[in-house]
Length: 191
Image 1 (cartoon, rainbow, N blue to C red):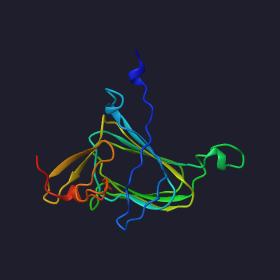
Image 2 (image 1 turned 90 degrees about the horizontal axis):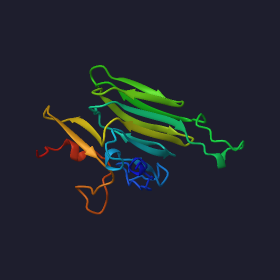
Image 3 (image 1 turned 90 degrees about the vertical axis):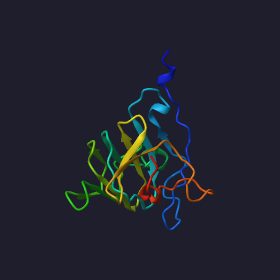
Image 4 (image 1 turned 135 degrees about the vertical axis):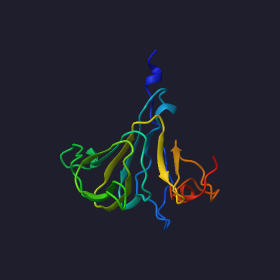
């Protein structure tokens, strides 16, 4: 009767690279909860990633129609701790995050200790840059939507909403999966 409410995470191996082609910034595999596609009627989706080196994760400012929460914790796991305990407060990183609309009300925050950020529906945010990662960081992005989606401003002043439900083929290179470079977001879209 309740089995549809329980979902076991599959292992995912995102292939996101920096524009310079650098990989290895995040531990593999990762876990993602893809919302309503995995638990019907869910109004929540979330990522679970452990960053181990600097990475400019999200360069393009955007907003969501529902609240989003970004969670940053230490990822010092039990088998690495001398006292045998996991320590989410063993945090040594500098993560630069922008809240608000650039050129209007934007504020830049430097996350240097375990932090949660609430991003109300409609509030612009990003870039998100893991500038320094000296100890692993557990990053969770939780959006209160059935599927992850964001609203992007286009160069012509219009807006487009894009949805993402897991790794997909890059539209520019059929030999790789999407690397979230954002190039396709800046094009004129059909529809």
